Image (cartoon, rainbow, N blue to C red):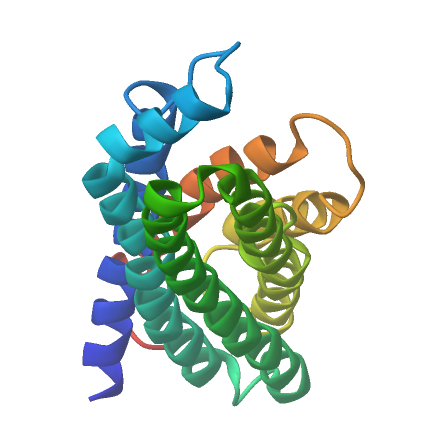
Length: 215
């Protein structure tokens, strides 16, 4: 059963990478809001892309969080015998990240619906509501990646200590984790850099878990 969990987690990790790629593609093309729009035009953009925004939030937050939960559990089971303390600490931050990510997605979709409904009756209030929704969503799971960075960092350190999975994977994971933690500093590009590095890390992790037998 443990071997099956590892295989499922390997697939989950690859799916996480694919989700990142999908979201980068969406927000870089059809969901990229044009510059210079006034409030009414921004509302029109949100309304015309409502279904796609709902899908992207569902995929990028809720589905991502569910797959992440599988991965957090599988990695803890894989590492706990040889690096128990680090694995437990990583699992705490992993579970916390799962909760924050899923909550962010639910908040984003509920907030989007609320903004569009309010725009029909009190359009002057929608800007303040949308600002509140986006601020809360960013604070919980989009604007910085401290919790996710801590999980990647700790799980990579645990992997090095346990000598489980590829050593290169864990050294790269440490760099990814540090990048995630650094997003607490409001510097341009750090969140995007963390996302891109996570695509590589999740893909590397997934392939490694699928190839290697249970230690």
